Image 1 (cartoon, helix red, strand yellow):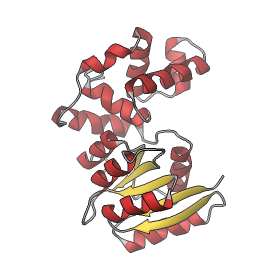
Image 2: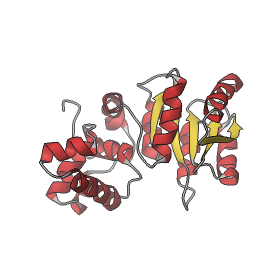
Image 3: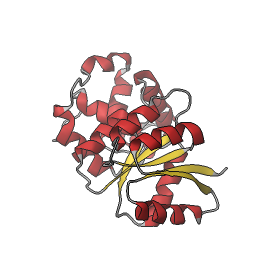
Length: 219
């Protein structure tokens, strides 16, 4: 199955380099480009891509608002992969809260970009756990309207522990090892946690765990 990608960046040269790298792959097709967040929202609706590569800082409408509108459009919205110049960018934190499936640095090797598109298209969150934890820890306390711990009341004690391990950046196999359970069982626990909390993926789980106080920066 071909992965349909929409590239969003206000710099034409960056869009072109991403297009060339992605179109060279047999399983990826760049279906459109946008230079503003407003154009991205329109094209995401009209072109129905599987993945949107989203710049953060753009004129007319930034990537944060565009992500919120695209992810909240209903139906089966595309996955959003945020591209940023700085790993500790409060706008990226906002994008994760808005529903982005992860983020990566713009200066990452193009081979990593291609792999990231495949990972996100497959339904997985894509982020470097150490960077994401630093990012969330840096901005969670300042987030307006942050949820409280009552969101966790829907989870069993085991599921709360699974959420804590997700927030620490552990994979399904690592969670299985930490809890001495089968990897498939760990995968089922993760799926139930996301479903009960109404979360799209592990990236949002990390954000919620910090905002609820389940994990703290010291951890």
